[in-house]
Length: 109
Image 1: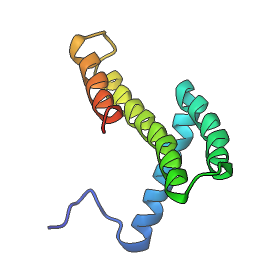
Image 2: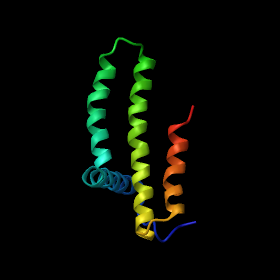
Image 3: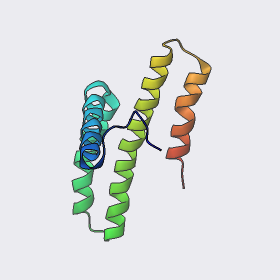
């Protein structure tokens, strides 16, 4: 089934997706203080992981943890933006919508 909202196909669709993603990263870096701090820390911690005298799996796990922090922060920012677009008033359900998914993602074994 063809969606009227998805007119691009092939490489054009991939390049559009790439540019939308880059725009999202730029917006997060510009407007989200926590994301900026985490990017700076990632720029310091990832090279540090490479310089540590541990195995390749250990390095990969350390880097994956740093990247997971960035991913969770982007997801949190997206949820906050959606909630703010719906309503700027404080509401218990809005708080729950933000804290529950982030709590589950960061407490995974």
